[in-house]
Amino acid sequence: MLEYLSNKQISTLEDSYVPFLRQVRTATARGTFYHGRAQMEQTAAHLHDAIVSTDRGIYAATLLLDGATDFSRQVGLLCLVTSRPNGQGTFLTQDMEAAVVGRLLSDLRPQKVLSVFLALKGNRWSGQRIKKMMLRYVLGSKALPRWAVTYRRKLRAVLTHAWGINLTCKIKHTLGKQSRTAEDVRLLNRHLWKHANPRVEVDELVRFILGDETSPRADVVKSYVEAKRTLEAGKRLPYEVLEGIRSRYHRDTPKERVLELTADNLTRGQRKAFQRKAEQEGVSVAWNPEFASLVELVLYGYERGFDQVAAYIGQKAEVIRDRIGLNADVIMDYSKSMEGAGTQKMRPRAVAHAMAMCLSPYDEIAPPMPRGDTELASKLVQSLMRQPEAAFILSDGYENAPAGRVAEVIAQVRRLGIQTPIYHINPVSSKEGGRTFDGAVNLAVSVPEALPAALTEGLLQTDVIAGLERMLPKALEVIA
Image (cartoon, rainbow, N blue to C red; front, top):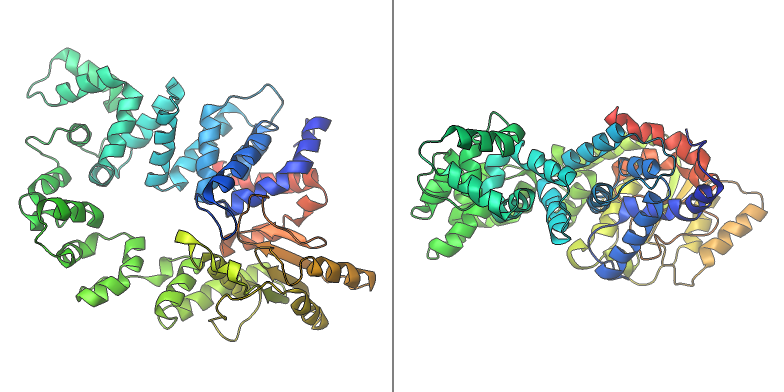
């Protein structure tokens, strides 16, 4: 599959692919305990540029792997649509690349995709390929009614960028006409209708997005306009939209009323986030833990206790544990840095905790709180004495009690003939591309659901090309 690679390409992949894969699986648009957001974004940009300029096919396929973060897929989408093949050989055809872009667009949440579109606008990228992608994504979505009231300003900016200011004004004027000429119909067919979902009232929604609220006919637009006069009229609107209207037009109405009116419209994430608030305000908000990810369930347990989610955690962890099929021992990092930082507070701990339950049966569901330094070497020795099939170190890699001791232990046990596989799983990105322990098979995974696939990729660290040959066909199955 990769026999066309030159020696220079192979050398670059050997140097940069594994750090790039760690970035793809752990990087977020936020800082960490040790590094700020700007440092993390700079590292991500450097690694993405190195791989896409080496082989576009390998780059695109990696973005499709299980466990790739939303941030990595956003950066990848931006990179693919703003760059062109550099003339070097690759297995990626134009049709395959279009399928990869389509898959990324469908997998990312709409607010993430719109952020990419606005980044394209901000950097003045406006080729026909980009304009068509924007129009098809926005106008062709069956979710456009909800998007129109939730992301109105962003959609207006995206459509204006895709059409240009003059054409946008012309389309807005045409949509507001009571009767249309043949020329008007041709205009709308060419620039609007051919991209639109036929089951959506696209004319009315686009007219609203572009700023015209007169004589609304679409139900969601009616609710939006009427809610400015009577809050109860907006009960079909998304929570955040109605709360915005309340804060501007109905300041004397308590916030609790908005939650009460929109309780049936909450998204799955909002239902989870509003559990405590709903209880305090006496509003019934149903949330089904069955549809939450394992990390989301663990974070919920930290905040509100594990009684409601313990059974779901056990079921999901057991499924992943069966897929891995190892009698493994786990060494957890409980140091202060695993607490996370900013909006990611407690997430590194939750990821490591969830992975631990997927790798080894557990007695208690709530581990100790993060505290103190990172001392892992003695725990590794104790683990190896139990003779497991494999030992897993779950840590951000910042060992400091003392630094380097884990690598020394690994080197010593290998000299003694102990060949137990030792894996280091780092759920946290860093400016170095992910901290590692010498002598261990170092994996970067930020979601437990990606563990089974990640464990098969250890070959990358001994033979990058052989590892890619084995891994890429599986990644490309999603666009077959």
